[in-house]
Length: 111
Image (tube, rainbow, N blue to C red; front, side, top):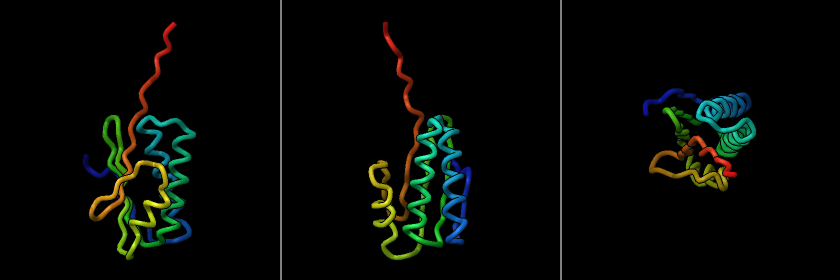
């Protein structure tokens, strides 16, 4: 997937909020419900605040999934980001922390 949004987060006050809204919008685009998208946005805002600035956020959106990749230059940032992401099933690569969003499967009621 090609990057759809690239965001340099330089400001420690506005940057986390902008990251939150970008990620929440992408989550809705991929098919997450409004509450799940808001929770994701809040989590990303928290990660950016914990890690600090500057950070780089890249979002790649496909037909049914999106990948949010965070990178930074400060030492120890990946461990801090992974801890702040908690149980989101984020993965750590050699240079980034990535979070993959997929459209949840639809449940079909039988009856």
